[in-house]
Image 1: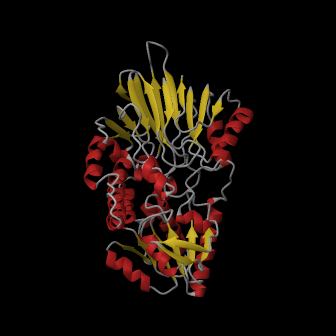
Image 2: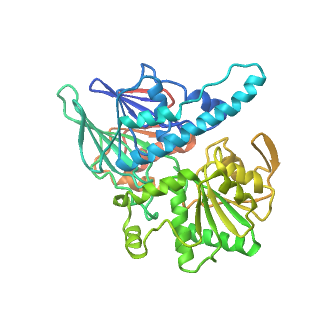
Image 3: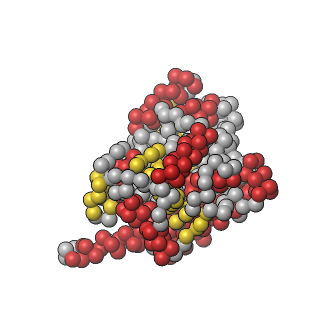
Length: 465
């Protein structure tokens, strides 16, 4: 068996890990690299050495884990893609949305390139390629072993990170030897986060572990604390007649926020101010959530039976058309606008921020991790001036952060997850984390959890096992 790390190595983006076993090339995740525009442009077009893989296994539908699938099609990939049913349904929507963004971004850049007499760029992939690649995706239920090639078996268990997220278990039997189990954690979720179930602990253990470390070395406040902080922020906006702008990922974070505001509204903790979800993708994805109650936790199931749709309440409005979105520019506070993208790199949220970043009564509420060099990271880091659509603008709005809504396990939760392993892996690889945190977590695995080997691989590192 050989593993080559082609993404999310000492960084938190672009998850791609190539496993070669039983004569097959298996790609774990196929994510978009997100960061500096030029670097992302080049990295996302980089093909795997040796040609496309024989098959792909997805841990979940977030774009940094699944967003570059259509590029494989362009490179000649014809194999099977394995995912949970919910991940398949989410990818169908999210890849189409991503394709339209790719095409739109390139069209904007090419206007300038033509004026300058330079050759135009080509979109990373098209909506048609995003549609075609979905024909290769197979949905697999949790906890069921599936033979995917001679000597290779696959199973998913619930990662508790987002709808349909999975830990990937790959059993490899080569040359008549005893089976070896590779466990890829995907992104590990948190306990007691609304809507979805808690992550399933890996009690069986594994021979080889590839594990994320997004929030290694950091701690989240309890979810209930962040929900109380959300209540305080909403009450402040109501008192000051301001607007709360919330950039949110269309899948997971938007639905969490809707459920939280629903609960606060129902118990009278916040006044009946209007709440707008201004994202066609988030609106469509919320419909996918309704199709997968098998992923819900007990509290959400109980709410569903008692009160009906948890993603709808009297003050909530879903906007779809461009005209509806533009009308939000004229909305006076108090109001709440939830819009994508979560890192403010694309989508309608950039227009809303551009329209209100100068207003000291506007509260920009960041509820998730922001990749380096993104507009979201700049604002979270306290930038006093930012460039939006090529125009430099002073930042006078209030910028707040809530960490308790994160769907990623923190240091204690990562340790709890790995501590549940009944059998320690002979080799562990720590990925999907910034370099300092990933390396520190390797030491934690060795010193505190008795791992014989733990490494934070570099991009392109090859491990022969």
